[in-house]
Image 1 (tube, rainbow, N blue to C red):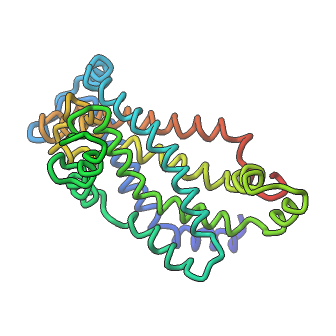
Image 2: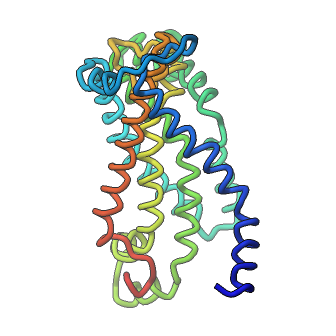
Image 3: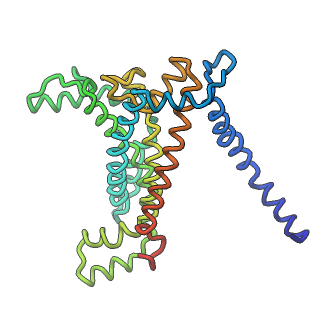
Length: 297
């Protein structure tokens, strides 16, 4: 490189150095340190004892790991696709050409700003079997004092429902994608006799596919790390019958309740690898379905 090119390179590295330092300090180092600790027996108080891959072997034979993984996959299999549908519907509502659209956008987005910790407390009141709103609605159908949190399946569905209040973030991304679609495409489709459903499936969704891919990957990542809702609703126990014992909750209990930091780090490393594999799989499978420009559509 010439001296001018080297000078520009040094200037560029100087500007991106905060990001580089942040990635090294808060991403790379924790990953490496977690993997090192996962090879030890460590309580957090005493000196780590090297045990090799024993923690990983134990993880694959631990029945609670299988239970927590199944619960997490159940949650992800419902929350992610339902969340995408809800977010697309919200984005379509936000994109309406009406005078009060700014008010509607704010109203639809505000629930996503509420912290998950607060939402969990709100939902705990909603589903209370004695005086909750859901219990009162069920009473109209003749079902009295139904405790949805005392059944493993309905408890997970309550948490899936709670997750949909955060769809506003994904809806904003979809809204940006909708605003980027040329209106001339819809005008041409209407001239050809295409109805609203045909326009949605042939124009809107294909041209929203990059945003759908992004929200799908981030949704999977978030679903694999579901923790706060189950922790608050069950006081960290994962009840009933381990029905809400999600993977991150079990990891947390091993680290801070059982003082098994080495085993918890092994679980964290496995979660990281699983998340990367799922994201890569989604990206590879979607290569033929994602259109990044109008011509590709």
